[in-house]
Figure: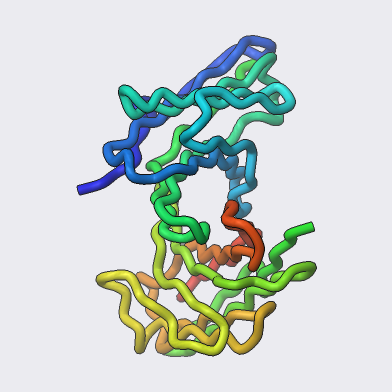
Length: 113
Length: 116
């Protein structure tokens, strides 16, 4: 069936380095993707989104890349900081009303001092 | 804007009792609210989708008689875990979408339920 998955369940990076978190999806019907950050004991927080008519979008220290050819989504965090330690989820949205989210399994990012 | 709150943030109850969790959109009208369940180190699992004034749509495998959802207004949805058992202990998260646009879901901070 359809799924959104992640290549790496855990990722450890040195403070100051760049982080790349990957997400693969199997169904190209959706046209909207979101990355969420979830800190321990809290709800997910929106980080950045991208529509399928784009291949790159930048925010503050974060960049999302979308490769529709290989159905791959990535989140790049520049100059990773201790406060970036969290679990990151990609979500695939399949209709025009923001419903039918499919969440990936999540990647835990640990920032090493 | 687009803030979603949940109450309570933590609740401990005895087995067999019922627990109600509230989800409120504080500064916007929510077209739809969603309820998720999350086990430790796992992703969010959608339990049900609710629209104001109508019955909730439950995902396969979620018992609607056990997890009662009421979406009484455009800013409030409640999840009641009836006759709770230890296996119902989990992190419950709600989210809401706005009327306008088709954007992300705005998530609440979650409710940690522990059933003794």
